[in-house]
Amino acid sequence: MPNRHEESKNRSRIWSVFLQLLNVFRRTPHSSPYLVVKKDGFDVINRNEYCWSLKWDEVTGVVAYKQAQISTDLICFGFQIGTNADTLWCINEDIPGFDEVVGDITRITAGAWPNRFSDIAVPPFEFNWTELWNAPNSIPIAENPKLLIWKKIPNDLLPTR
Image (tube, rainbow, N blue to C red; front, side, top):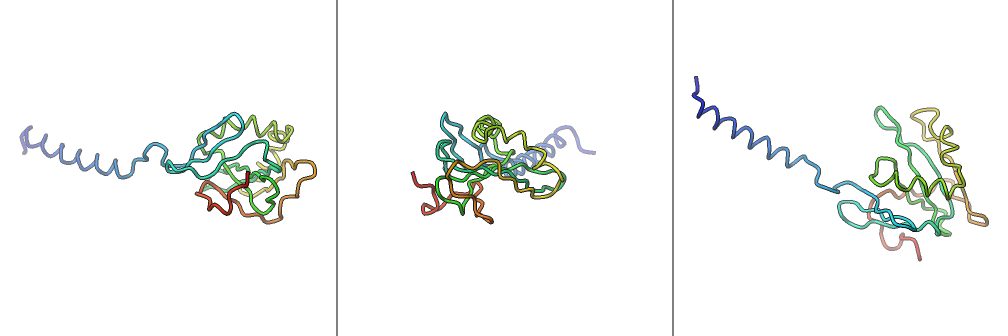
């Protein structure tokens, strides 16, 4: 039977291995995407790297849809910027900072969000693509647009300012 000193050494080795594994699997701060909310829009940051930004006065269309997860659905929003009808800039409810932009989404869509929540939420585990708003005289959102999520966007796809 080991004495207390030997038990302590064994435990410290096990604890050391445990801490090393924990450091490998632990998420570092901001290793996942997050929003930096500004007065006039927001920036999308992923792995501490700027991906893209959106200004509310440049948004010409808003859609809502769901991504089916294993046991839940993830509400997502796509924003058309300017005259680019083939690309939507997307965020979802799991991204830190999302709650801070919901009020702006409600304002931009003239209340369509959250009023049309049930169109998006029901039935569960379906895509439920729902156009919430298009600016007057704007180009309609393409039928099958490219959805850009929080990846770093190549310069040729960045919205022109």
